[in-house]
Length: 255
Image (cartoon, rainbow, N blue to C red):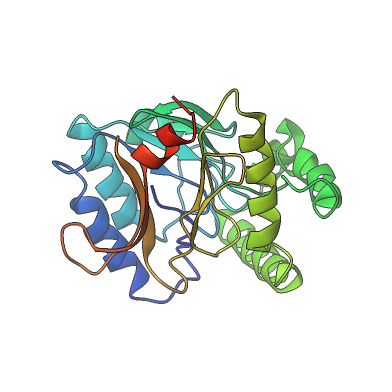
């Protein structure tokens, strides 16, 4: 699982590194989850797609062609995916959280934007407007060059204003609260905070955040035995930074 690569504003070495990572997926993974903000801006016109990161799109399409299911959860920067990603690329693009079994874990995966009750209240109201059919239809009437320039300016403003506010502690708290319910999930994964993390919740279960490739190319690997936080180094699997074993979860009384 990988996310927050922010292609379009990321350093030049991020795109080729991400392409290499994606090329290494076939034969080593049963599925792939792209957990939002893969692009710093993504929008689908009827016959035009953003230029940035087209090699990444091609690599993702190759993964799908190899028979590996790919789920793409829209983040706050790439939530306007649709027909092209679903039909032409073949991914399962969705805005709702991914809930179900991943590697034998009862997982709940979401990008993480808008989840904090108090801090994100204003953003949630804006989110409803930006994702409305009216807003999407109106934006589509803009020339792609103009629309992309507007989006980049807005994106930069958002990152500057949000600096230090999309904190990992806030999302960790939300994840721990979900895990404390103890009925639907024993693994919660978020992104958005740009802080890679792997932690065991006090009530049991595991919280993971895959971090951002703006600072370090980290990703999460899930197996039946463990959840691992890894750093991509160009090798087939990368370096393991941290891991929490599945057996410890069973000892805590979880299935």
